[in-house]
Image 1: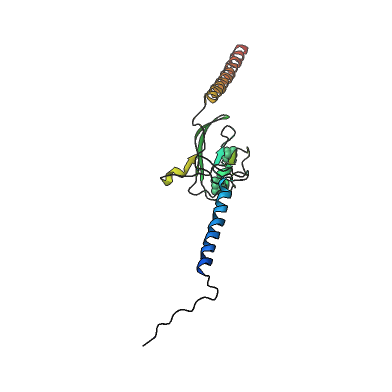
Image 2 (image 1 turned 180 degrees about the horizontal axis):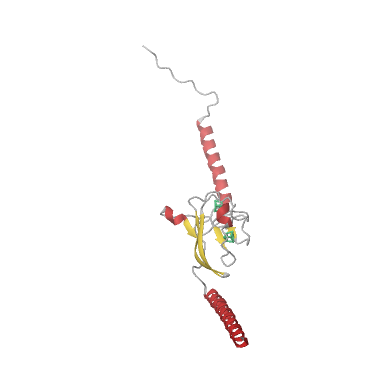
Length: 185
Ligand code: SF4
Ligand code: SF4
């Protein structure tokens, strides 16, 4: 029958009062650290009410300076994952915007869409919170308005009136020329 052997006592085993002293000492050290941080400024922030500042070079959700954009699609062509889509109708120099979207289900924040922009109007922003209950909500609209603005409508109407006046003047000149030629005959 195997005999039960008592485990050998560790060589550095402390006495009872040694253990008590160690416990009191470590508690005092711990409380010292706690009290030291009690009066210092907290490192934590109450997200999402508070947010830590992001670096200047941070690449977050894009922002578009829509009034500068010329609908050239250079940014969309440069995107390696085809996540930029846009649609607009041209009225001479004015653009009637339908949409300008980025699909953040695919976007990898590489910034390759920013460099080819001839108007420097698409930028990587600082916003990083992409929270949604449905994946379709990760397709974000970058335009701030759709259609034509009131100012654009005025400019389009002016340009059309100018064009119509020019056309009418041309027509009148042609008619006058015809009349003159008729009289001469
Ligand atoms: S950051 Fe990169 S992946 Fe995202 S839209 Fe621009 S080019 Fe495409
Ligand atoms: S490259 Fe610039 S100007 Fe051209 S469509 Fe994109 S954002 Fe607009």
